[in-house]
Length: 178
Image 1 (cartoon, one colour):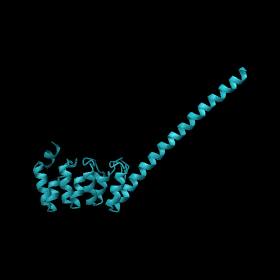
Image 2: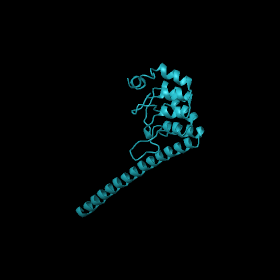
Image 3: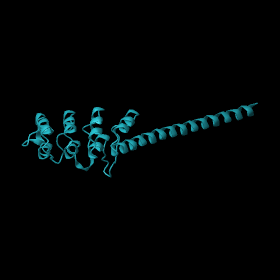
Image 4: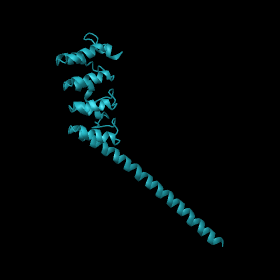
């Protein structure tokens, strides 16, 4: 009788250990599937932005893509967010949508530039104004002055908005960093 109970206990212990192992494997697989799914969404988001497909961007965001997930991470760990990628890729409609959806306008961008720089470089007047209104940094660490950039591109409404926000030619960096 004792031998049967020892055998039964041994079988029970092995079943519990096997069950825990199986559950651990199932949990890890589920976690990996979620990670893979998140990576696919980010990849799809990047592709939709690159193809200038606003409808696809809207669909992907509404279906759970992380709007702040890293896109095109470089060897220094710097990356674009969806908004940064849209600005860099000259996709004004998508940039407007992402700002409306609450994208972080203060997120950094590789290449030592800023979101405002790319909006100005591609002459996206209304997007630049929306970025300023949403609180994007007005200068970068290298002393870039968006007011001079906007003036050089004859972007009068942006110049006006930058001046309203305290940026002047003589104090471009100082006003922006206060």
